[in-house]
Amino acid sequence: MANTGSAKTSAASVYQRIRAGILGGRLRVGQRRQRASMASDYGASLNILREASSQLAGGKLVKMQSQRGFAVTAMTAEEQRDLTLVRVSVESVALVRSREFGDVEWEAGLLAAHHRLANTLVLVPAACDRLNEADVEAHSAFHAALIGACDSPMLTEMRPSLRDASKMYRPLAYLTQRGRKDEAQEHRLWREAALARDADKSTMLLAKHYGDTTRVCTEAQLVVSAAMRGA
Image (cartoon, rainbow, N blue to C red; front, side):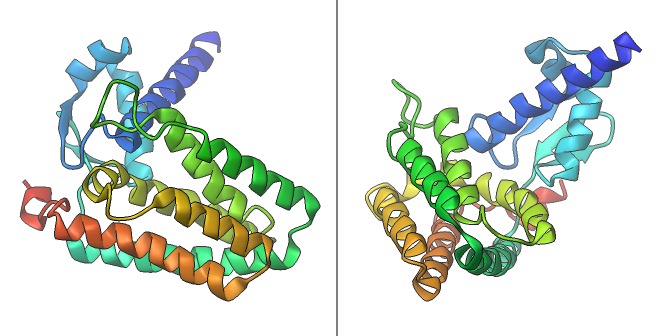
């Protein structure tokens, strides 16, 4: 029993570390990794790597490759746009319901999440091509806080997998669009619209925020082709 518990804890830890690597940009879209080399990198057994990989595949973050390992999931431009459509649709409804049911505790949580995000470095210090893991988590926490008062468990449960699938592209999009859009300003406007209970403006900002990232990825040819996905 003790060994089983230890294995589960280790698999969960490895899953979190690989997930952070994908969302932070250390593991790139389309990048392939062998289980044997990753077992060495993470100090884990092949069985633990296999379990962690299965969790990542279940969340659409990686695609399993026979017995060799996995590749970080790559989407075509059409799949990326479809994902954005679904994510905007789900989160727009959740955002409206959060506005309707949000109380002072929700407002305080949103303000705290925005303050943390606004005061966290986006890039790793002394690095120019990798997102800071603290920023990745602060960014996710702010988006979660926006819909934190939504009264629908199903809507809330649908969000994480859509979020992670989209966030794989954030490192690439951020590095490409620096100077083209002001994310910090977008977050401030979004916070203000949510607190003002302005549903129309909140959902408009949400659609623009996600839509702009999708367009940047497509324009910069950061979405890997379907042929490469099947390779």
